Amino acid sequence: MPLPLPPCGDRSGTSTYAQDRRGMDAARFKPVDEKLAALRAYRRAKGLCEKCVERWSRDHKCAESVQLLALQEVWELLQINDEEQSAEQEAPAGSIVEGELCALSLAAAQGGRGPKTLKMIGQIQNREVTILVDSGSSHTFVSEQLSKLLSGSSLLQQPVQVAVADGSAIQCNSQFCNLQWSSQGCHFTSTARVLPLVHYDMIVGMDWLESFIPIQIHWKQKWMLIPYEGSFSLLQGIIADVPVGSMVQVCAVLVTESKPVELNVPPELRALLEEFAAMFEARTGLPPSRNCDHTIPLIEGATPVNVRQYRYPPALKDEIERQVAEMLKAGIIQHSISPFSFSVLLVKKKDSTWRFCMDFRHLNAITAKSKYPIPMIDEFLDELGHASWFTSLDLTAGYNQVKFKPGEEYKTAFQTHSGHYEFRMMAFGLSGGPATFQKAMNTTLHPLLRKCV
Image (tube, rainbow, N blue to C red; front, side):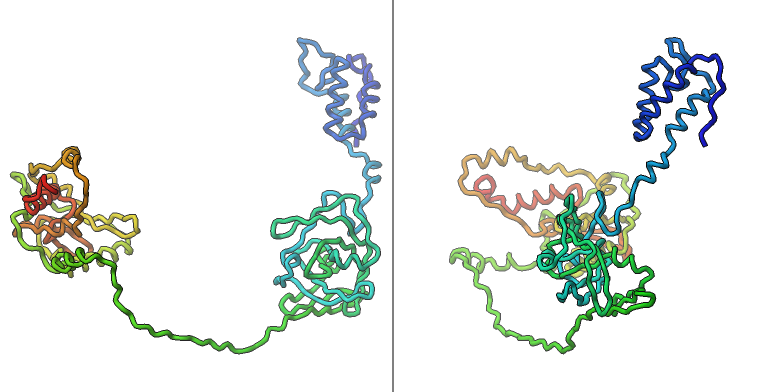
């Protein structure tokens, strides 16, 4: 109910009330935002405050209580006009209205048989048609090819876009209002949109299914029970016949004789490989003792170091066990009772395999450093300045080809979750390793240094 009008009195602003009412009535049927904007503009034009409707000045301050006159204006402005509501008419059932969403399922567009579809045979204007009852489509559609054979189509005032489940859209330009069709003795009337369908003549969507609520549908057995003329009617869909048979698989086994692959090796290189065949064979056992066998001299007063091993998940424990077993078999490590103990590190390679490393930082801290000279890269480049032919030597696990001097092995002991081991050959990570390896190369290639090496 609108608030009652305020009592008459000698208050500033009440003389403009009748004019304010006439300005408000002129904008009565406009949207609320436009009405409020028009009301504020009208008050500014009259020199009134937009909030309290009093005369506005630079030193004006609104009263703490809002005048009843202002509340009356806003109340009437926000009221919904009953006549305007009654003038709105609902759109006819089944017709396309502006902003309506039409959707077509993927099964209807591509001709599939979805889990919630039902295919049956019907008649439209004495023509037999294939009908797909599809709960994934929003409306009822007929194919463009069938529409050319039927009468009663009409053009839409504005084309409607139908969204397909694959992300595309189809434009609908015409429709059939009150299209009569039948199936299995039941007659129906629907509004059908015309689309360029390929696999079905008619798609019956949710607009038709919702008109028969309550409805019973068995999607697996392809039937539905609908209320029809005061009773119930059963519509049976087409059940796809799957032929039952047996499959015979024939396997052919082709037996071929494997022949050794002949490499195209030049005769000179073949003779060299045959002469030094022992050098290219897989190493078994320990390398021979040499004058350059590795030693680990400890500083004065050094005591054995025992480092707690790192924790590893079960998958990495399996990898540690595998690599330890391989090194035991190859003779690289052996079981140990040494007072030294260091931790194992697994470092992932680029090919996703794991490199078995040792954390020898505590051992290196108490090791006397070797002063054997390590060549500089600048010196190498100076020596190669006038050379024309270049080659390189790469040793397989070069560090593992250098033995420890007897009695030095216990200093490299390490722990795993399965035992205590020590290296029998020089391991990676030792501080004196590069110097020992350089000494071994210089001793072996001494006659050729600065000539061709």
